[in-house]
Length: 258
Image (cartoon, rainbow, N blue to C red; front, side, top):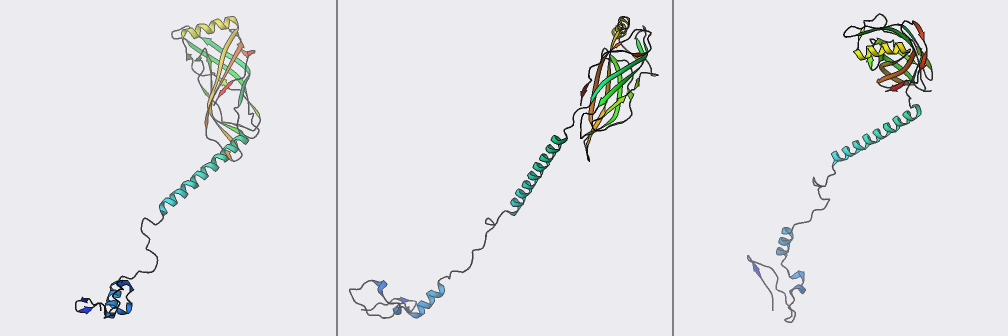
C-alpha cells in the first residue's frame, strides 16, 4: 500500500511503501515528505528572534525616586551633624546668667504730695554691681533702662543707660541717678500714705528694676538678643529730711530673668 494526500493539487507525501502492520505514521521517514510542502511549512513557521527582550517602562528604575531618597538622606545627615555641633558648643560654653547686686544707695530728694491724685518726686542713686560668671562667654547689654518702684508702683521715670560690654569673668559697677530732674510721678493714695508712714518709722523698702536686651559672645559666635529683667529688692534706713548716702539694711542678690 501507499499513502498519498492531495493539497491543492500537490501531494503531501510521496508514494512510500510500508508494512500493513506498521500503522504508526510518526515512523515514516522525513524523506517521504514532499520537498515543496517541506519548504512551504518551513517558510510559514515563524522564527524566534534572538537577542534581549526590550525593557518596558515598568521595568525601568525610578530615577526620580532614587534622587529624592538621596536628597532626604543628605538633609537628615546635615541636620544631625548641625545638631551635634550646636550641642557640643553649648556644652563647652554654656552661658550662665549675669549676677546683679545693689552695693550702695543715696537719696537726695523724696517727697509725696497730699493732692489728689498724689505725686511723688524723688532723686536717688544706686550703685549696682554686676558680675559675669562665664569664663568663655562675654555679654553685650543693649537698650538698658532702670527705674525705682515702691509697693509695686513706679515712682521714677525710666532712665536709659548706655550700652555695656561685659568681659569674661569680670565685674562692672553702675551708678545711675534715677528720678532727678524728671517730672513727679502720679501714685495711688495708699502708696503716698504708706511712704509717709515708712519715713516716720525709718525703714523704706524699694525695688530697683532694670530692663533691656543682652547678647552672648563666645569667640566668633554671637547669639541673638534676649530680654533681661532684673529685680533688686532693698531695705533702706531713711527718715524724712535726710539727704545723702543711706544705709542698706537688706540687699539680697537680685533676681534675674532672661
